[in-house]
Structures are given as structure tokens and as C-alpha cells.
Amino acid sequence: MEDRAKRIIIVGGGFAGLQAAKSLADQDNLQITVIDRRNHHLFQPLLYQVATAGLSPAEIATPIRSVLDQYQNVNVVLDEVLDFDPVQRDVIGQAGRYPFDFLVVAAGAGHSYFGRNEWAGLAPGLKTLEQATEIRRRILLAFEKAEMESDPERQKALLTFAVVGGGPTGIEVAGAIAEISRYTLEKDFRRIDPSRTRVLLIEAGPRILASFHEELSRRAARDLEKMGVQIWTSTRVTDIGEEGVRLGAEFIQARTVIWAAGVEPSVLGKKLVERFGGELDRVGRPIVQSTLELGSETGIFVIGDLAHVLGPKGLPLPGLAPVAMQAGRHVARAIGARLVGRPLPVFSYIDKGQMATIGRKRAVMQWGDIRLGGYIAWLMWLLIHIYYLIGFKNRIFVFFEWAWSYITLRRGARLILDSHR
Image 1 (cartoon, rainbow, N blue to C red):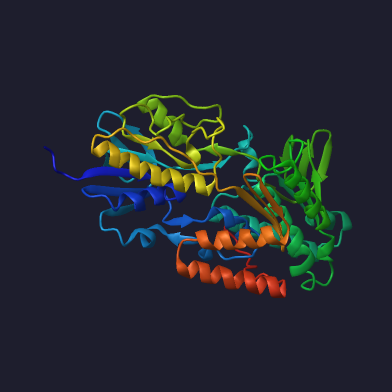
Image 2: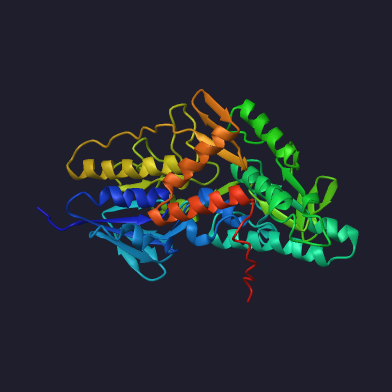
């Protein structure tokens, strides 16, 4: 009987990958390797706070090594996975090859520009720290340029911000820009009035927050409009240029455009299916079994935003942190079952609800039949997000940063960093 430790490769250090690694680390005779192309775990729900100068990058990111350093059987590798070898059962990275007995792929997703990838440089998305600091640079630089601009039309274009996509990320970014322009920057400039900033939220569907109950969608829209955000629903972006966005026949001059309108799974999902078999859904995610395994007896699991897995209502589960974390814990149980010859358990997702913040004292929350809005929802959003931040230090920093911002209406991370220098 073979007694060497089983080799488990986990691709991705997000919520799903880290949860899988921590849950597996308690099992005997396993050698676990976590591979990620970045050295940090990122708390993506708070990326918009970095993009709008509310938090600094280090307050929502933690080195993966420090998260897993207490587990002696877990190794962390900084590498980019390129492909898979189904014959040798290797993960192929830029720096080397990694043999596996079990493979967990949690490579996540990025933004989709629906075939117009040339828009990426004109309208950055919000999935990484680099994108968040770039958006922050563009937002703050727009106010600085407007302060120096003497032409009223050019000044108006500089103070017009277009956010494409009416999901949680879109409304959070739009609300935060409206908030900082009316409160945070109000006294910082002499020639311009930041409170006259125009913020457009553009949604192709009939309403914002389509995944929420219609009542909460309407409430969020009312709150955003009170903050000065103009909401354009049933409006599709047909082109983006350096001067602004085109919405069908209409062109809006907006020097800063932010993309929050769709996701595209990692290309590793397609490579997995090509190498090991299976099917992709219409957006390119591998369709996994109810056990989260790709095919039967493959020892390959796909979890997190990359996986197409059906929920209790027969619909694909959304790309939320609770889904990813529960899937990570499930995979650890599934691998444990396979090692002792038991049938794999079926993944059963416990719905933790969803929430989105709109601004100071404004948020919406939905959990089953419970629907909340306003200050109570915002307070719950605040506490839950601080609780899920990895690392005690991060929680303390974020708590005091938010407390300071709430009391003073100031934002302390207003640094313009030029990525080209």
C-alpha cells in the first residue's frame, strides 16, 4: 500500500482556494501546494473603497504566505499557471511543473467587455489592486485637471464620471464618487465646485441590482438619485473613447469611465475541459457535478467564480464570497471521502443572502424573505465585511479608517500614483 503523502494542488489564493487549503491542512498525509500569480489574498468586496480613496491597498490585502504559515503541510508558490498535462497529471506553470493526485482550480474571473477588449484601457474594471489604484488615480486626477481647466465644456467633461454596470460593484462605485465629490473634496479646490460633479450609472437591463428583489432595487435607485447619481437603465454602451461614451445615437462627454458590467471566467476553465473533458457553459465556466468534481473519479475540482454549479433553485450559484468559501470547505470533505473510499458528498449551499452599500448610512440587504435598507442594512454590511477580512490587523485598521471617515467625512488614501513612472 502506497504511504506517500497525496499531492494536492490548489490554483488560486482567493476565498475558495484559501478555504480549501485551510480545511485540507487538518487532514493527515496530505502535501498541499497553493499556486497564485500574486502573492496576496485580496478582499475584493472592498476594492471599490481603494478605488475611491477610502482605504489603502494594504488594508484589504494579506500575503498568502502569512495566511497559511501555521500549516506545516501547505506550501505557497508564486507562479502563473498556463496549462495542464492530463497524461503526467501535472499543472504547468511559467516557473515549473507541479504533479498532483488531486487538483482544485479556483482561478476566479475577470471583467468581460463583450468582445470589445480594446475598451479595457479606456474603462478599467475593478478586480485587482492594480485596477483599483488606477481608477483612484483617474478619479483624483480628473478633479486636479478640472481645477486647472479654463474652458467650461472641458471642465464639465472632466467632472463627468460614467460607471457602466448597475450591479453591486457599479452602485458602490457610483455612490462613493458622488459622496466624495459632495463631501470629501468640497473644500479642497478653489476654482471648481466638486459638488457639481456629474455621476452617470449606465445599466443595459431594465433596473439596477437585478439579482435583488425589485423593492430593494427601487430603494437603491432612490438613494443614489438623492446623492446626485443619474441612473440610465435599458441603455447599452455602444462605444467608448477618450472623450466619453456612446449610448446608441447619443454621445456623453465623460473623461473617466469605469467598467462594472460583466465577468469573464479565467481561461484555465477552458483549458481544463480541453485536457480532461467536460462541458463549458455559455460564458466559459466548466460545468461541474453536484460534488464539484469535473467528471467522475477525476480527482479534479472546480470551485469559486470559475465553476458552473447549480443551486437549490436550479440556477447557477452567483460569484459571491460565501459561495466560494462553502465550496472550499466542501472540496476538503470530498477529498477526505475519496481517500477513504466513501462516496463524495453533494455540495449543499446555505444561502447567506446578499448586500450592497450605496453610501454613508445607505445600503440594501436581502436574506431569504428578509429585506432591509437604510442605516440598519449599512451597519450590518459594515460589521459583516470587517468580520470576513482576513487578519486581525486588517480589521482594526479598516474599523478605525471607516470610523474616522464617518465622523469627519474625510478620506485618507487620496494619493495619485502614476503607474507609468
